Length: 324
Image 1 (cartoon, rainbow, N blue to C red):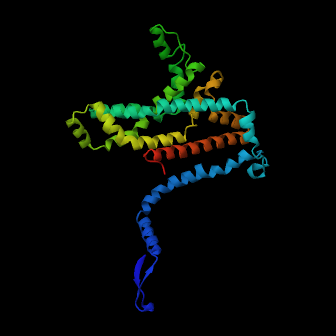
Image 2 (image 1 turned 30 degrees about the vertical axis):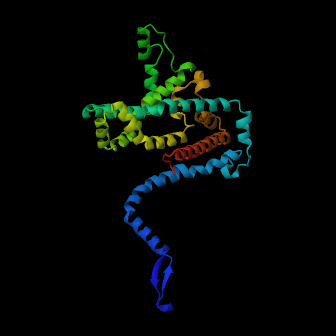
Image 3 (image 1 turned 90 degrees about the vertical axis):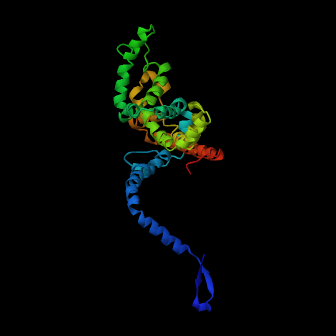
């Protein structure tokens, strides 16, 4: 409230709401940063067109969709597709189990991999060698899974692959990595780490660059080894970034890698590789059961949203930063 001199009431000072002045100040601030908001516009348009507009199709999960009638003309079906999915579908439990297991393996081995690699790269003292190491680890990220799948199939072939050739040199039996259900998940997780570990280090290297050198100098004067400096300075300093990335990773816990699995799996490995996304693609697009697969997608997104909220809540309770 700002004091204002009012002559209509004998020159007494009265208090008026300062809300209009705050709005004007906020508007001036926005006007001053208008070019920054202009840079943000393409991102907002992308989200509006490709993330929010498609949500209109969610209603397919509650309808018996008929192409000739369209989305609006198709009759409502209530929770029929969810009931079929949860209680009658012979495939749902299998694909849910596969999705959870593969996602868990990705988080267990794939999430700490960029952190470890970033710590190792940060220890490299040679600038040239450091740049070469970063470039080599970034490189697989820029190839699509179509290309990488061809490379993997060639390298892991049980008859002509280099990997099996090396195994035979040491007396081991050839392994059919992509055709054997026992080794398929191992191949999935390993190849996913190889593709994304370098790219995932970017954020952690940026966080490591922000640590004050004086902290390490003080630790050296106290006689701390590199390992103790890592445990006492490096990891605690970048912990907020790690927690933030973990919350974001939990949000996509049911995204087990559609592109990768679609290009690598085969009927021989459906029992361990068929996940929610490949099921949606195979049943929805190939068998035209759009309503059922929309129900699967909606279920997946609701679970992911609940996990993000839960993880964010736990993170804030533990004293770490959250998304909101």
